[in-house]
Image (cartoon, rainbow, N blue to C red):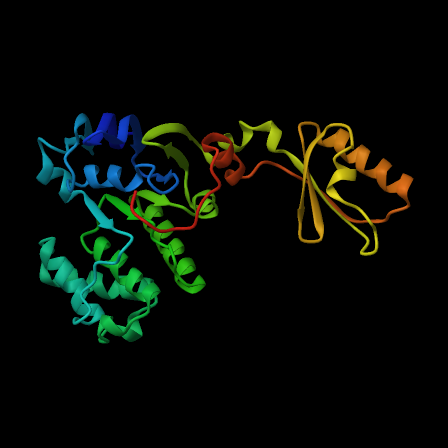
Length: 317
């Protein structure tokens, strides 16, 4: 499969600060590629270089074979981009925003008008097409911004934290619309703080920390890398006097945390932990209400690799 994006040794320094440190990877044409990392990891700086807003200090990058510095115009024609802060025009209507974006991308009038109406329908905004965007909610403005980026039917769509801080309805609409565009052949490069979003949407994920790529793989393969994050979740009858310390004494259990009325026991040997929990319950006369084995989550992988709990969205990186 051909590459939509190729990076080789891409680096950006700001004085003594290395924001992006010799990163190399490729994004395959037709995939949704997730780019995860904590604030300040280098995500937005990477996108800024790939879209021509920031000049790399070292290294090279290509968009569908076009060098981002030597063939900047050709590379930019292939892409659409949506930043975390929606770049909409509040004094214009929804339809006018899309038509204006189409003019900027040199989309012929008949084509851009038809595409604008199609996108407004897809993003659930047809009934508000003549309303001034300044009166729209944050989620609606983000939907307009993504529609504007799609008006020229780009081969590659960059999305920088597209659902950060949005309402549930907008999150669902945006995710489904992006997946539909991908099914039609659009390659998507997605930066996000939302691990569950990446898990649901992405074919592959790269994790960046302190400007360096520390892992690239399919979500399920990343989860398999940490056996130590396997766990057993158990809840006991309400009047049972059970605490983390007692459960932590069960052989093969490394760590116990309380999650509401449930306990989560981390182990590298779930069958042995299950046997130990049943033995514990029988010996203490406690009734088990619910018990499940859990594989490692993408968040477990992230914390294991970066040593950092995933923070809430916000801030440029």
